[in-house]
Image (cartoon, rainbow, N blue to C red; front, side, top):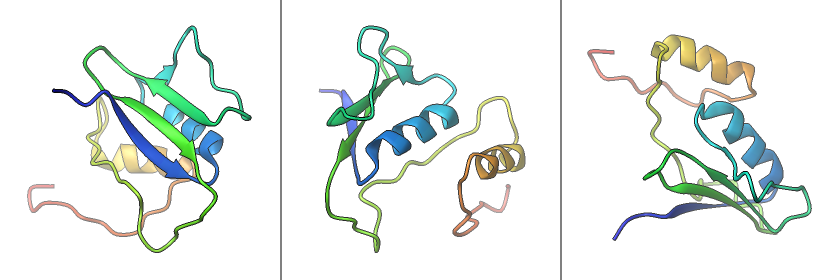
Length: 102
């Protein structure tokens, strides 16, 4: 058994898909299945053996708890550099959770 896809419920699935595509260096539309704003789901594919990310439109706007979250690890950048890059893409820092070693 392996995880083929991670499904993310969101009210603006197109914007979420595009934002995560700009955040994740190695995820993009499938070459034979581009994402269009009117599609019911948006899918980003990454390197082989990595799960797809599927953004699914839902009507209810649940704002008190995320339906899913990612633990991210920067590649080729420091944590500080990555936070700055993500802030530039529209992210918001909710809380800093760093280990004593940084």
